[in-house]
Amino acid sequence: AAKELKKDGINCNLTLLFSFCQAVACAQAEVKLISPFVGRIRDYFQQTTGKNYEAFEDPGVLSVTMIYNYYKKYGYDTVVMGASFRSKEEIVELAGCDKLTIAPKWLEALQASREPITAKLTAQGAQDAEVGPKLDELDEKTFRWMLNEDQ
Image 1: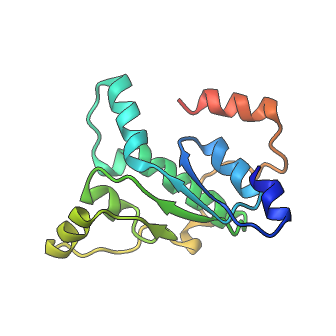
Image 2: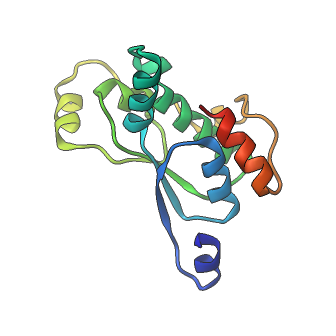
Image 3: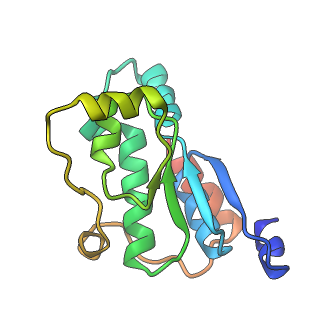
């Protein structure tokens, strides 16, 4: 649908992204902005594995990092806007992302923090990131396989 709307000059923000293949499909459809839900991805993995994750190993943080690096490495214009954070530390791990939507309580926590925040995601750093090959056309079979592998 987003691809068809783009043909009519209508930009889309696709939310509720939970997997890398969804992000690739969005980029190929020239979606303007995506909003992967960091905290909800982490919630799923915590529920299924029973593990508590530190921010640096948080599956939601790792997902957004992979998407950001893939987009920047291969020149996609789609904006990555991380959302649905569960901790200040998740936000710090994604410093440098195109955009972040941050709840007031996390903004207050960041403001009160004394620790320096440096960009961890950069377009330059993405060039050396291991993100796999560029997928020229994501067909349904490949999409479904990637979706299954991303769990």
